[in-house]
Image (cartoon, rainbow, N blue to C red; front, side, top):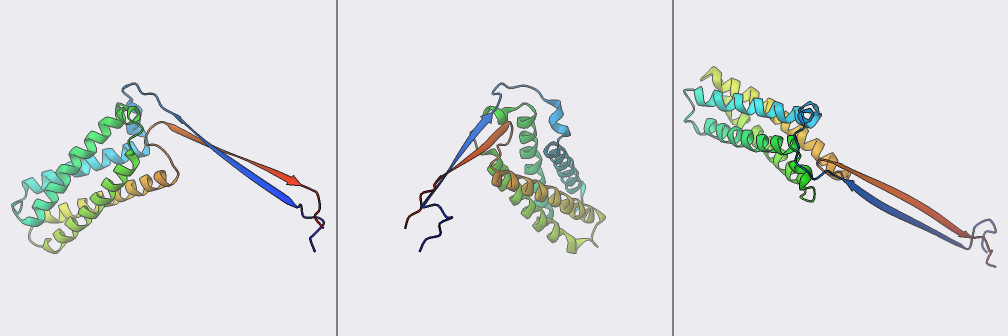
Length: 183
């Protein structure tokens, strides 16, 4: 026996549309450095440079753990610097079809892991030189910055955002009911 209050047919249609708004001209935007991702990149650049210079000035710079930190922070400085320039001049927005957020997510997660490994390997050697402690501390600090940046990129990928520009996603749901009762 069917419920007389319940319709015999029920159809629901959901239409999702996505609209991507980007400006594909290359232009200088000094305000990017004041956004959270821009501030994170500036912080990462400064700390990468501090660690690289500290390792270079250390008398233990030839040790494998210090060479590892030097390589990681040197490469991180250049890669983050290039990304910072790409964002500042809206090159990322020009090539919006490239999955920039996913690339940055992988990069930031890997660098966070590499910095954790390097800083942890440096930590047992603190008694040898104060510079090693300095490198270890700033390595952990930079690990946190890259980790938080990776978290922000992960959230952006989950939400379907693009790296620069705007994407508007709208959903429209319509329901149709046939109120004839089937006996």
